[in-house]
Length: 94
Length: 211
Image: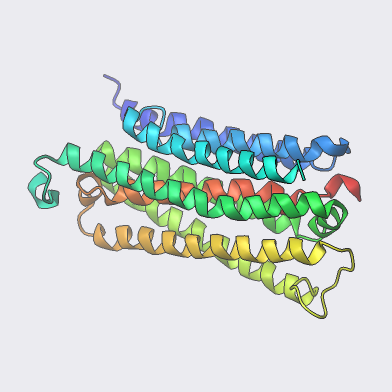
């Protein structure tokens, strides 16, 4: 086996994700100055969600984790979605 | 070696590690809900005062915000590699990556301090001599101070946890792979990064294209 393979294993995937995160940071910062009207805010939020998903899946190892931890991690976004749904139902129907 | 780390009621280390990670995930979800309450309040007030939020958002310092985002993402990367190195029995590399993580996190707080000083000098602290006149601008900055302040407390807690790992394992790098502490601390640190990733667009990118 290649002697360097443990190092490659350790660094490769996180490094790719870090490069991706930096690229997304540059993209979201640049796009914030492009006048897209109402679309600026949702676009920046979508990029943030993508960055958070990358950190969760690779850095926090949800990708390679067991189902129990994935279920626990999914509870967060699910309940946040329910909270925003109920809040929106009240706010937009007044 | 593994017996040193084993705690009741567990009968093997692998199960203990799984339980710690699961417990940490449950805690992290409760943290997500804490911040979500703030995000929800921000969203509602942004809907009520859209012009005030856009005007106030332009006044945050995008350079500090962007540099700090890059710093925190890099620290998340270094602690992620540290965990992988520890599990591959490369304890020394893991230890130095934890030191680097600590330094990056600490520099985040230093920069945040400089940013706060400039914000105060520019009268962006809500109160009687607040710099902006648009309605809703003070509310935006109330959220700015509360959300970044609560986040800074989390960064400080994370730094203390990382420093504990560094101190405890300084003479025994193998401790990092045996104990479940490294994994739990890394999960917490990543959450601190994820929260900042969400704070960045809602506090620093707002209103930039509307100047």
